[in-house]
Amino acid sequence: MTGQKPFLIIVVIIIIFILGLSLIPVLFRARTSSTSSGGSQGGGNGTTLYKSDDGGANWKVLNNFVGGNISTMTFDQSSQKQILIGTEARGVWRGDIFGERFDQYPGGVGEGARVFDLIKPTTEKEFIALVLFMNRGRIIKYKDEKRSELFFTPLEKYAFLKGYRTKAGFLRVIGSDGGFYESRNNGATWRLASRFQSGLISMIFNPSHENQVWALDPRGSFYISIDGGASWKDLSDSLRDFPGANDNPTIFIDPRTQYLYHGSRYGLLRSTNSGLVWEKINLTLAPEILPITAIAIDPHDSAKIYVAAQNQLYISDDGGVTWRGIQISPSGAISSVLINPVNTKEIFIGSRK
Image (tube, rainbow, N blue to C red; front, side):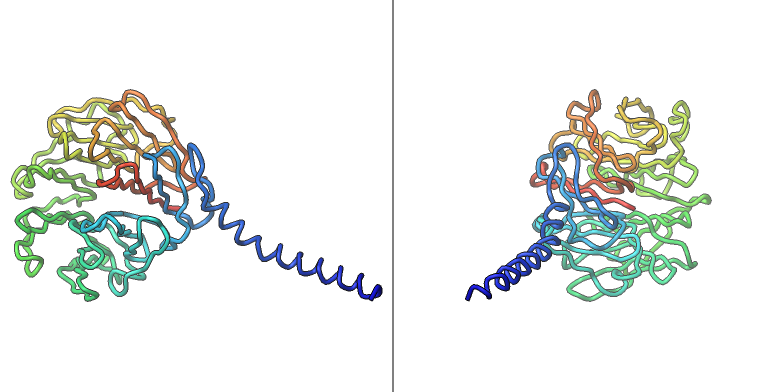
C-alpha cells in the first residue's frame, strides 16, 4: 500500500492540473463580460455591442452578439424586451435586452446584406429594412418569417439610406441617387417626390409635424421641406460660420423640444428654430477625435445628451453645459446610441471596428 501512495499523489496532481486548464476559458469569459466603472472591459477584436444599466456610468460587453459592425439599432416596439440590430455586412439580428441570445434573420435581410435603416414601427416579427443586397439597394419587408421586396434601385451600387413611416401609413425614403421616394399604399407602388442632383446621405423628420423633413447631401449641404419632400429650401448658409460643419455631418431631432442637433468635424450645434440659426455647444473632447458619429437624448429628459466621437461617449446632464467622458472600447468608432424609452437607464451602444 505504501508503494501506491506516490502513484496516487501523481494522479491527484494531474487531475487538479486538468481541472485548472478547463477553468481558464470560463474565467476569461467572465472577465471579458464584466462591468467596469467609467468604461468597459473585454472590448476585444470583434466586439461591437455594449450595454449600460445605470444611465451610462458603467458599461458591459455583450459578447454573445457576433454580427460584426453595427449600422443601426432599434427596439421591438411591441414590448421593448427585444432589440433589432442592423449590421454592415451580416444583415439584421434580434436579441433580448439582457444580451443572452442573438439570432440572425435569413435571406435578403440576413447574411451578406448591408443594413442602412430599420423603419419604425419595428417588431421582431415585422419590420421594413433598407439594405444593399447583391449589389443593389432594396426595401425589404419582413413579416411572419416571410420576406418581400417592396422596391429596388434601378442602378447597381446605389442604396436607400434613411426612411420613415407617417401616422397615415405613407412610406418615405431617400436614396444615394438623390431621390426622395414615397409610397401611399404600404410599398405596393412608389413615386418620386423630388430629386437632388448631388445625392443624399441622411434624413430626419419631425414626429410632431411629419411633413417637416431635413436632409443632408454628400457635400454637407442642409435642406428643409415642410410639405413632405415635395419641395425644399437650402439652409446651408446657416452653417457657414462653423468651419467643418459640412464634413461628415450627422443630424438628430429631440422629439420633446423639436430642437435640432448637428454633429460634424466642427463639433456639436443646436437649433431651436428648425435649422434657421445654430448655436455652438462646447464639448470637452479633443478636436482630433472629431467628427461626431452619433447623438442621442434621453426621451424623458431633454437636458441629458449623449454624443459619440470615435470610441468615446460624452454625457451631459445639464443641456450641454458640462460633460463627462467615457472610453467605451479600446478601438473602433461608435455608430449608434439606443436608449430604452421605458427604462432610460438602459442604454445600448453599437460600434464599428
